[in-house]
Amino acid sequence: MELPRDDKTRLTLVGKIPFLPTATVADE
Image (cartoon, rainbow, N blue to C red):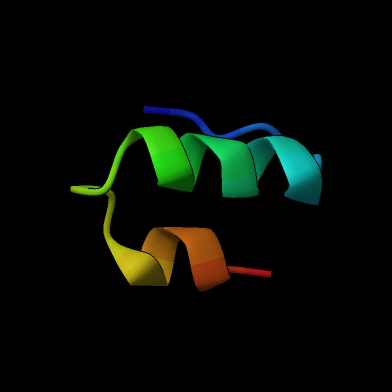
């Protein structure tokens, strides 16, 4: 699953998809 570059959108995805790996979100 490709996450958008927009941090706000990514944070929203995290809230909606709690099973997403933290490492994927924290990847800068």
